Image (cartoon, rainbow, N blue to C red):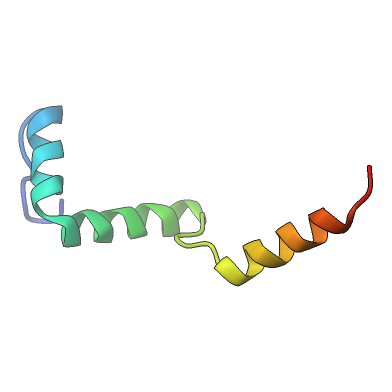
Length: 58
């Protein structure tokens, strides 16, 4: 990643990211931004949607 080697192999890379959560979060944020997926869900919005769904009669 950039100038740092995260590790050689899947398990070593995984262990490196577990030991370096700030770097793991940075990489995850960049991946999500690239693919335009939200990083966090607004809890107030979730509550509003749940409330609206509860009012619907099936």
